[in-house]
Image (tube, rainbow, N blue to C red; front, side, top):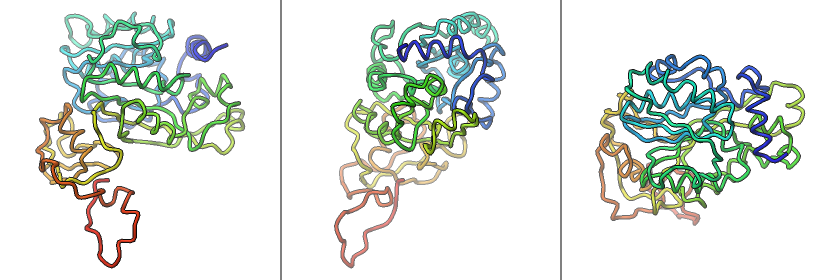
Length: 350
């Protein structure tokens, strides 16, 4: 049985609800913003019962966006996003499991009526996330692509990332949660149907993922959140041994010409506090928590992630990027040579 068949069988026939899972890899913690929790309360119970995500794929500033959900399953995140993008937005879900898509399609009209929309702003397509070009999707037409604990299940993760890059508009974003390992997973574990279905067997070593993302066009992957995963089932825990697994959310922007390191151009940003539900601070990633009204020094890449994306109108920008001051102090990479007695200037972006 191939990888696609193993996954389709596990999610279409073995798992009947989220209570059938053997690990907490595909379970989202309860903590979530109030507006997201309120929207979640409007999702049909039958859809929520067949949810297998590992994180929260709800970034900021969603109003009116066109969104694609990879591996949408029964549609929980699609319907949640459909509520948050509003009637003028659109959310498309892709999945290869017919049983899951049947549940999603059965509840499209119900959610449109629940949200007060004249017609559904959702669409569901059956297909493989490795071959997005074969689906009815226009290149460069999406503002945002999300995925919740699915890319690790793909046998060709590079094809997924390349396909996403092609579908995003310039300045668009891949914002997704997935499972990663602290080392490369042994081949035997990759062929274990239970471990694979539980999102552990296909998990990438985190450093391999970051390098792969860069090769596929996403030059500066940003880690947003992470949490360790527990393997409570005794049989499965014995298989994984000392390998540690983590659920992590990354955001990858489609921006040409980003630099491979955190370079200092004397730039800064000021968050206006105008993004809905985020009046006090904006969290770009784990190392960039930007308080409202505060001058926040940033590297050239971070400046562009805010200036050339949907976030631009919510920031004031300082600096034109014409003068280079070297590596950004505090970013983890510094001058490799002995600087002598003179201390380098301080400061830091990340």
